[in-house]
Structure formats: C-alpha cells, structure tokens
Length: 178
Image (tube, helix red, strand yellow):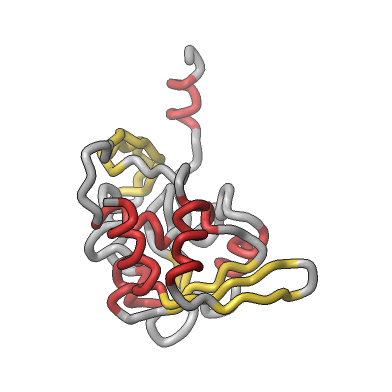
C-alpha cells in the first residue's frame, strides 16, 4: 500500500490503441487490434466493435456508467444484438452486467475506481464512482436461462460455443436477479 502513490504517479495513461484488453483473454485482445476495430474510451472496461455500428457502440463510454444506460452494452441491447460465447461461460458474459444495472435489488453496491487517463493531452489520475460488478451468480443464471430460452450451442475446435439474443438474455436475467 505504501507503493500506491508511486504507481499512480507513473502508471501509463489509457490509450485505446496500445493498452491491452487486460484480463479478457486472447480473443478480446486480437479483436481490439482487428483492422477497422473501434474501441471505447473507458480505461478499465473498454469495448471493441467492428462493422457499421462500431462508432455508435464505442462513442461516449462514460467513466461512471460502465454498463448502464447509453453504455456500449446498452446500445448493443437497443440494436437487438447477438452474443457469442466462444470458449467461455456465462461468468464472462458482459451482457449480464447490463442486467445488474437494470435490476432492482437491495444489495446493489457502488465503488470508487481509479485510472490514469489523458485529459486535454495531459495524463491525470482520476477517481470515479461506478456500480460494483459481481459475477458470482452468472453461471447458475446462465444455466437457468438455457433451460428457459433458446440458446444455440456447439463446438469450434476444442471450444464450446453458445449463441443467443442479448435482449432475451438481459430481460431474463433482470427478472432472475430480482
């Protein structure tokens, strides 16, 4: 803890062209580097997109609004997008965090996060309040969703895959969480 000020002083500012997709795996890292990929400006929860809606999905990703209204995940919901889980389970399904923000439940928590970002071309360490995310129940939620709704599944190489409409998943998850 004594070293935190040193880290805060020298940690590089988020750069969507260079900063890796930390903790998201090789597929996310490859995708964010894909030719024509766009990436949001959120330093801790960036989203990458390719295609005709890429600019729309990645623009305006507010620091304090990781997954809520107007976030990339919410915009994807409004477009009635599809989710493909490739070699990962529901515990890695970011769409379920949108359900967390929409659901009404008593244990919803908020936290302070910090990141180094560029503001007016100058690196600054910024604290921001945001909803705390918790994926502890996403696997049983996903199992319940698969029993109740259509999920296409199969294999690609050694990886299990699942495909579903994001809106169906989020709407189901909100009710399940409540």
